[in-house]
Image (cartoon, rainbow, N blue to C red; front, side, top):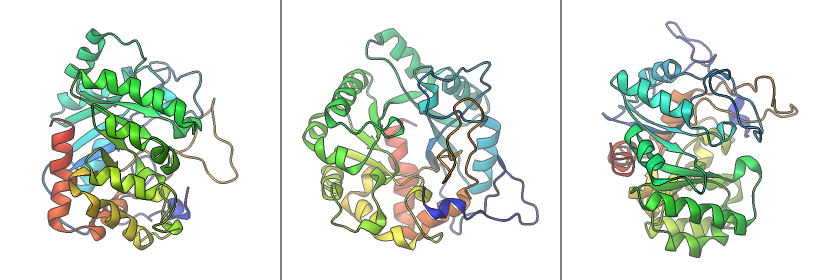
Length: 314
């Protein structure tokens, strides 16, 4: 995590915190039907037990919390992503989708399933609002391209029959090693959080050219999500060149997301597996404002509305 993660916004008159964080309003007009393409919902553990192989144990992050956040920053559509502590049990995500739909919110989800998941279960997930499958490598420290290839190919085969996509959280070296595999996938691949590219490492860092080529060829979507994970400056200027390189490679393959409720390690503090691992108090209005400074109004329409509308079938 970069230092930006700890630059917390102070309360202003009329502010109401969401999970202990205060959120400003972005400095541009957010287009109608803008979508947050990456967030998590965590429910009570007595109802939604965490996976045995979890690397951390998150606290509660409810549907009501994220709706309050989105109302504050001008977001009306959302995509819930199954998080690593939830393992293969998608119950929390599915219940959240049902609750959001009951509130009149437009919501989709990305699930995590086992290799032998029957078609009937996939069809039930589709009816609930699932439109993709996630292969999370980074959260488990999985960097072996051979293992990554197997997981991505398996997920792609399941997703292809549903008209879905595959999403992965991994690094540039893994993406570069799998560039040939990715070009052959029967479905699009969505890469989380800038592919964890490092703005300070410059345009010649290993793997970035491969990611840009995959984006340009239309094989990969990239989420310009969670800038706090890669930036050093709170104004986002150190990441502008990277965002522009990705956008200019293919604006139709860009997405945006908050990564709310902002899990991740704190320096010098071990992660909690049994207790409650704290969330980072990130100002999501500021994150959206950084994106606004990187883009034109036409690009914001495409990235916040048009691209997710197509990919997630809104």
